[in-house]
Image 1 (cartoon, one colour):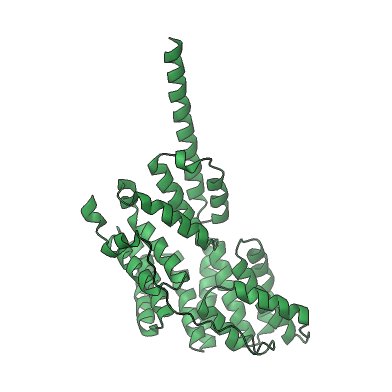
Image 2: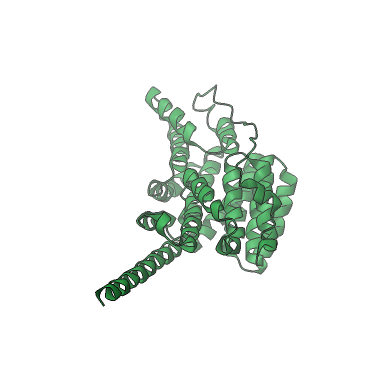
Length: 336
């Protein structure tokens, strides 16, 4: 009788623990939009991930991946991808294949595996369940095209995505598209057009209360103000953008903010000290992406007396993790 009661108690405790974990996973998922950094805090408080059910482990890694993108945690993203592909035949993995391969595509793009990023995103698009996912992925494919240097394809994809986003009132995707179109305009030297796009992106992100987006669009808009020497506009936007950026766990965004503010001070008549130049050089190493570094080299570095900056161009690297073969085949529907 005692043994029976003990077993019942163990089963009860197991159910309670499972429910507690499910509640924490749900809470972490709920915070993804408003505060993804807090999502990570909740997830990391769950003990012994390997002791969870396979469904819970996959869910834990999916939420981690989704939170790691806006919080700029690439190592966390690839670690979760590495772990989750161990379960590539599990029904819950297959059910979420679009989200998983989309996150993989983002990591691959950010790490200059552009061909593999395109492959992963095309696989994700193939298994997309609805127009909402297809719209997001069209935007992601446009971003890869931009990084490859195929701006005509990128523009066409963004225009297509924008039409769909407007028809379906997908304001979050519209803000992303405006921000990315602004980057293309900035790279092409059309600063006035870039400013227009970034203004629309910032308003969109503010309406959605999406902090990571507000930071990105705010920094980009500050960049255009500096290029055009619109110092009053810079001053107005700098403080709210600084507060958001400093409260966000992204060293790369804080590094860009330092470059922008230092150039602003110089335009205000303040000389740049040797100490500040050393700080800028360190910050430059933290800035992500060759495209952004090219813009810094073109518009900021010469004025700040940096004549020999690191060449931001990088050779595309092959991505050859063993499990990537499943992404290339992309036949998960046949596995169900």
